[in-house]
Length: 249
Image (cartoon, rainbow, N blue to C red; front, side, top):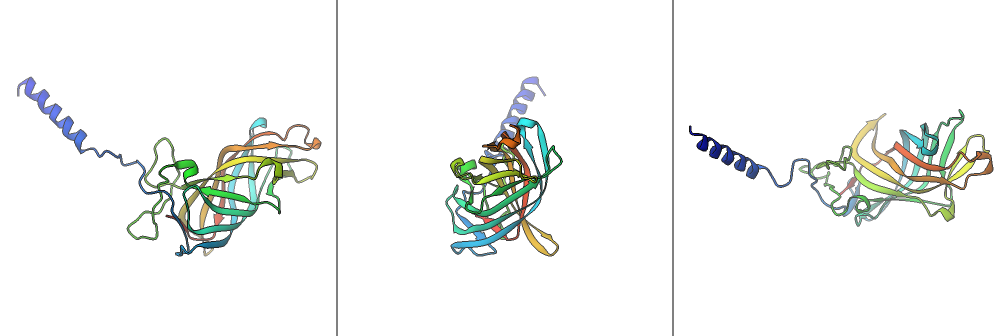
């Protein structure tokens, strides 16, 4: 075959290959913005009480360069079942606590004050305009599950959101050493990821709610903290087991 014919054939094959490649690559998002939260198969509007159990994670205190291993905690409140505008409040926690170790060998507890609450907004606040959720109660659809990667968005990944702490003026979230001599307040927001995959632990079904990333910081420390209890706080996969079958659709 003449060289010109070879080159022409190669060019044709390349063009055909390019035309055969879908406009949307296999790892591109599918799905839709959140419109509904279904709980245990029901999407009737209302609130459903839930209590999360701590399952692991760490917290990094950036100013000190120290990562504390966390050992316990709870998250109690409710999920807003029914219609939801993407970016709206999906969970409200009226109790929230995480206990971690410290460089002093004593524990520190991050806790929500009894008079306050924390909203968790799911959807458009982080992923607008496409939140990439699917109807997992439809046998032909896909359960939203897996770690989200912003560099290469997947067709399915954890449902994304933001935990919004009350304004600093309310002093709603504190970090207190077990000795009781040092306390500071927490401000800011934290990224949230909800894994819809259902797992069974000791006969009980759970899903995972993760608190991740930067966005929180300490302020207003007491004098006994010696100026050490300040700066940014990074949450590293703080995981709560949520005992309900929740589906973002």
